[in-house]
Image (cartoon, rainbow, N blue to C red):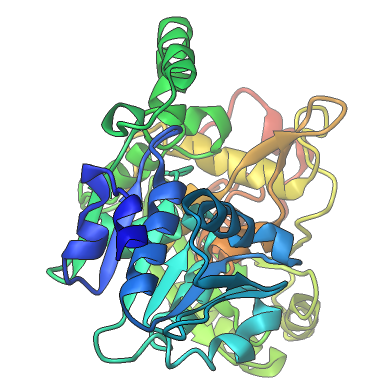
Length: 439
């Protein structure tokens, strides 16, 4: 019992051991002592009774990536001889408490599903956890009275676990913000660094030391506030040409999406799962006949090329235009590829008084894309697979909307069943366009 009393938990972290909550979500900036407090609290509880504790993170390629070392150091610091530190686990020889360490990435899914007997799951660096990983883990930790402890430094406004758990917590979720000035054990040197950072760059200080997410303008392509504003109703009707973006599913868990837009109004999404090329071509054929769009811009990469070929053979070559995300941009001095160009046109669209269909998945996808630049200074976007890891799904809805900006589409005032004829380069870039409207 004397050794238990050696472990002193700072006041901000007492809810870890005192309150009964399913989820205990702690976040904040540097110097808050979250990792130390979590480790000490778990060791204290593991001395008092037998527990199975799973220490988890998104990626764990080796035990060195885990909190194994931190727990080992705290055991040594307190002289807790009851614990035996093994290469891949930590055991309490007296009461049988056991610490195990696992990654949550897809290669470990079956192992994660075997954690049904866990008493406490500690998710470290939870800002990197994907929605998909959480959806596998949450129902797996199912023992009566079990808890999930989460520690994170926020990175983005829409970090998956923040959106799912902390933004609007329920009665079973405890959310605590802990920073360096809440930590009585914070070294004076860290406090001096925090003060210097606050004087030099208040925005960096807010993120690094106060636990605020990064300012979106620093790394995000599209401003989340503008997207949210666009989702409020404001446009009753629009006579601009109808343009449809069709993002074709490449993999089994992706969706094929038709996005309908008239000028400043994006008013409809149609989402289809597990459709083959013929089925999608049939749906597109019905949409053409019913809605008579000026253009359908179709993602022709992968299986999308088959859908495009079928529609061309059916006589829709004037209305259906194939787009390759990796192709050369129209303005290739500014954009590294077509995907970056379309998404940047979409970003500029949000600068206008526009209306976007209200859809939370679409909102998250639009706000998820990070920007970067190639060696020539041209805009590129973060790879789709990296975004999918964070969101737990592909940006199918947002890509469909971005496709509607593949090329300018002008209304020539002629009523046609299929399209408005070919748009030539001179039409696309001439300054005087009488009776025409673009984008």
